[in-house]
Picture 1 (cartoon, one colour):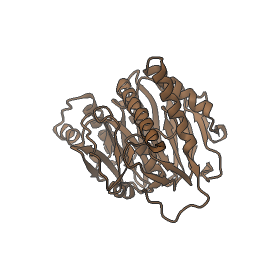
Picture 2: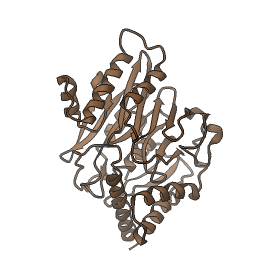
Picture 3: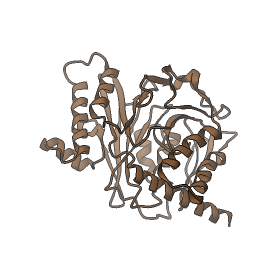
Picture 4: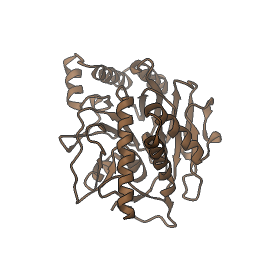
Length: 366
């Protein structure tokens, strides 16, 4: 009976989050690109939405988790520490990088169609899939291999439509989209494989090769590919980080680009600025304690700070999580019992996470 109640609660939470995502048009103008500067890899991403309140979250190793999913929820123990960006509460990220240099970014794709129920596999909600991969994978190959065991599933298929951009410290890159209920993986180091916006890879490539964009998404994709080509051209780029940030500025959408994030996977560093707080901030993952017994840490992405964020990280509190959850839900839902109930369910989820005393040699989802 308790598991049935939990399942109903999970469906209610994620169904309403899906409505919020649709109402806010999350990611509809997001753009991500991976640059290769000789032997240095940089990934840059714009996060576009109607508001930019959120938290940067330090996620620890050795934490037992159970997916928020209505069917065969996956269970796992986090193998890798990570830093993620959230707006609807901890464990529900849109982007992040782990200590192995794996980056995972979620972007809107209206054509997405996720698989039907498969009793032979475990499932993770399409948004939580980002955190699942940051927790369990160290490479693009491992992310792709996980598709045989665990698949992302939406609560409301007509609303939760996204695709994923994944890179690792070696420079490997892949786009993972679910089209017609099947995983479609596009992998390669060609310039045109190293960018993603909100169109399918097929449509994006057609726009690039034909020299004519049919949508804002295709235009941003083509602009991103041009910047990637410049980065690896014969004329060396003097300042790779400046080039990455200038590229984000080129594809930014006035009034809706909230965050600009730049990852350095091989150095395990990330930097970002926001529309509200435009001074550059960064965090070196080598300076962060990801041990199981370390406190979970957070910082407001819009805090009036600059430079190294490590000294400004503070211990996670329900109150801070509640603050951003309240803001997001209050922006997108009318007041009433349903909004209050959903907030409480989202806020309760972090308390279900339990540390394990010993890390298993191999972590497999059930």
